[in-house]
Length: 150
Image (cartoon, rainbow, N blue to C red; front, side, top):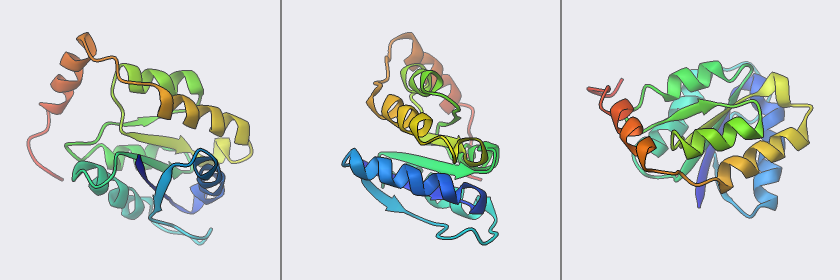
């Protein structure tokens, strides 16, 4: 499994924790920045991961910014992306089971001091399969709404 990851400055601390968790889980990760807490614009980093997912160059993505909202909004502009903002392990599982999410968006400011919560979210999201069935029809309806790239 190949996972692409990126954050802005507000998500940098949480991203460092996520990278360690993924390393412990033996997940191959491509880190697209940022690499410090110096202020940056989150769309530039969200686009790097969203493009990898949209083009099939990565299996899954993880994006982190202060609230998680900005990177999620940005990533969801891409046809092949189903980015989900997640705060807990149960929601992480549901976004995979029902929505076949392929980018996990995390609120760095809320989770940077909660490594166990981050670990539980990541494990839940990575290990939960898409159920398909009635959910496949719904995911296809979402995909049909896009007419072109941003």
